[in-house]
Image (spheres, rainbow, N blue to C red):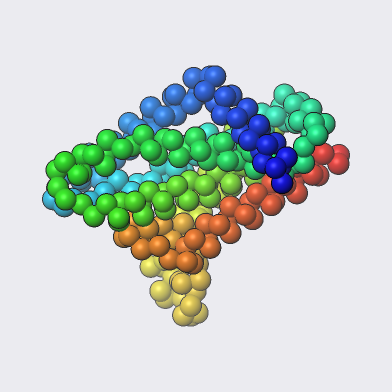
Length: 248
């Protein structure tokens, strides 16, 4: 067990160093922070709302992550396959799942760092009013879990191809489906369905349905199970794909 943790830590450290050794990490952080600021204070109607909350901040995260998370994660395995270093990685004395978990955790921590760097927004709302910081904390937890779910999907699509652009497009399409199946304009169309439970069934697959609870300060077990299941399923599928490449 200790050896497994050491291997995961080594792979994760290697991945984090790779991010910050190129301008990609810094460009992503700047774009993420600027877009968060714009959508919160300009497009999100922060000031017209007249309330001390970060509703206008979190409401845009499913859409921001739709493009930014796949852009960060598309290189996870596609780059390894393109450069031929995946075969070299698997010749090392580590289990494939060590590399899988190490690379995923490193990228997820990077996304968590980007989320933490939005603290000026939290400071601003506390300076202007008296918000419920417990609700804000729940929103951050939900946002972090949603980023992990998007990243796990991108990790899976990255293992399927050596082309990063294809990985990006496929992961965006899958994540977009998980948004739209719970988006009110879409679910409202299902109200006329002859199957009464169809709307609830389709909405249960959406990140919007489960993320909304966190934004309201409610942590539901079903939402934790949902995000954990998406992450677990996608990482399991990624492992199967990697073993197929290794066997081939």
